[in-house]
Image (tube, rainbow, N blue to C red; front, side, top):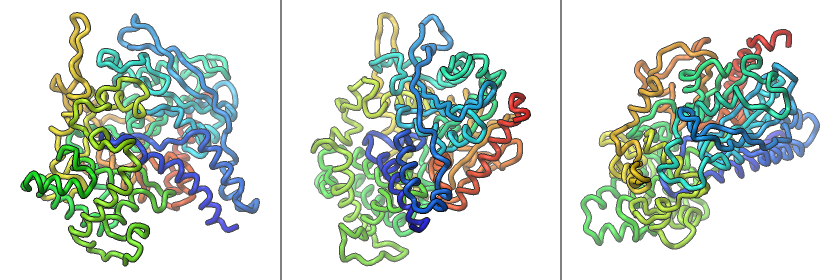
Length: 558
């Protein structure tokens, strides 16, 4: 068996892990989060590697076996760190101490961010950078579930009053208090005290930003930090989301999507009512509002966030092939499109077919397109279901978007710039979701609302977080790793919007760029098996983290 065949086996498993991301909520843009990778996924990767052929080939692929066991546990966490009298809730975590070398050894913790952390338990395995670091330094690996997701919610019903304790400040305090006070089952408390053992905090995207914010706002507990695709600077009108996408995608597809959107926007703005209905009917969305239709078109380019080195021909390229009338199943007699594309008319026809043949069947549970795409419908289930688990925790995430407010909405670009999203989708449309989801609530004499309703914007978050990507003070053992074509790149320290340009990497403040990389792809250690540039960056990142961990006093002589 050739090595490439073994990689194909791994890729098949990786595809199952990544493609599932695209089968999610039709409400709003993708969340800034890492790639779900459970312990079951890690074990499937192990199985694929073990069947790779000869012993030599297995050695080339094998991570010396993933740590196979992760144990679920709970920690009594404060509901509100500024008001301990409110009591505690059970915060879930998992630990893996198979590689733990004893008292004073490192504790490597990954914050799973805005999702049920059960889907991220594979980050304790050495198929990921956090699990691999734990293995390399004789440490234990932990995955911590973010408050208000999975089994870590203080409340079962997400009313506004109950959501008030979900904020960045409490999320940061959760991590530092956990590190200081948790009694881990595999070691005496004194042996894992942050004063006596190096704790390392990993995060991706939003949770990567939390890692950076923890270093700024609550330093001294964690010894080192790793921020993957850390979106540390909130931008309200974040049309820049699509800038890296356009740089990384096929040029003919990009050109044709721009042409299609110009044509659609013209009809929605200037056409008659019959014209607009006829246009939406071509896409199977004749019953939805015009702006909801325009917003649904972005589900195609959003697929870019879910691509990585291992996915190969994934959902994004399928969408592009439909637009270019080149998908082999939909267009069996098609010829390869030229560099300039196929033009607006053919591209619109292909876009419409993709919507009807791919997106709607995969996304919608019924024929009710308003229920599936009706952002402006006040009776939509998205606005009326207050349970913790609904839509994978969509409501608590929207609370952070609307209340902090992180905002960060990928809107259509201004005139004069290329766009992958309808230019009709702007801040008023996005803000309407906040008004509908978080309608004013009265409890006794108390009136509860959300931050934007009180006049807050993303700029307020950046000020509270000491400047977002403008933070100028020296950092201490904080590593940033970003992807060249990550759609969230312009909210990281590598943003072209940052005053002075993207942050330069130094020994004191290392910033690594994954060539051709996407969103948080560096965290999956096996990506280096698909791309030599990624492998080099991952090796650099691991060397930096190992060096920092070994500088801790408890690691002398090890």
